[in-house]
Length: 106
Length: 412
Image (cartoon, rainbow over all chains, first blue to last red; front, side):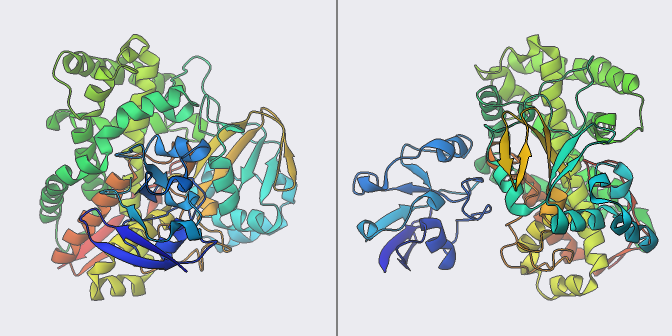
């Protein structure tokens, strides 16, 4: 299991045990992390699993590209470290990562 | 429901099945047609129809795949099954591909962004309260007119910042825009439709445009478009300005209106669900998503293939018309359990196709959800029952899945 810390917009933290092979979105949904809607079910087609990542500490996560970048074009409050959680696979390198949630999904 | 008609689809040869006929949607016969296509021919080619040859995409995941592949499936021109009238081409960003789509959509989005919505919540609640308090008690009335249209019209007037006393022009123009032979509705002659849009709607908004362009930027659609560097010259292409107005008026009006009517109708069709709601009004947010799925206020979106592509075991040719039937994807038994049933505490109720997917996904989905949520929160504080007293009258269209009339009686 890989420990992931989801940080809500109000600062509340929720620690989740995720499995390698899941996506970050799936780990959030399976553990009832509020603030991630994942309407399309992980197809990179709705941008309702928008999160901010600790890019400096976890460069392996990488940057958005392709369809993910297109979808984030139309999300709200997008920052350089914005990603869609459905496009981030859980790996052991992510142990202890803090994932920050936006104010709302659009 | 007319069961005699339902039996008929089984006797039609598969290749002759044409789901584009508006009358099917007026009578709910479309449900049986799409059930058969999903089972026997989920990617279906219809050679002869009022709209020419077209492909039907009927399964949830196939719709998701087409909707999120905007390179192979273009929106350029129109997203309706019927082609644009040759003499009245009104570009709008829903019917554009990147990069033009992206620029125009981005310019309009701030009007309905989450931060803006929290500002609007108390205003909507106040308006909902007034509308509900003014309704007749123990007497039949048309819910569509008194509630669904009134509430969405007031919202739209705010989003455009149209003077409140002019607000009834908006649903009128919305009806004119959607009564088009492009969707199988012949309520108005095409020339009359074009005349109203070009000679009434356009000048009205052109005047607003000039006012807004010369004033400080604000968060209404017109001001946003008039001040954004990517769109501030849109007034120089009047048909494109008109096209985008039609998009934002219809998108912000018919859809929510018909989901509101559908919520009342659905709870009457499934009284055990209404009981669940009375027992636990906390179900309202989940119910809102479920109603939007069950109603599916827009039946389809259309694309054009930009190249030959293998899809679902078929070969779709470059230039072919491809219609994603949201109304069918939302009834896909492989993705949604018991899809014909309204189940207000359904698991994963947000997982529906009513908003579409990909870059053209509904921009105003959160405003829509918020209006329906607040409406039901206020209804549950006031009324014990909203009883539907006769069969609704449906809109004749293969695009807008809606109600002309829903007669109800309220008991407190």
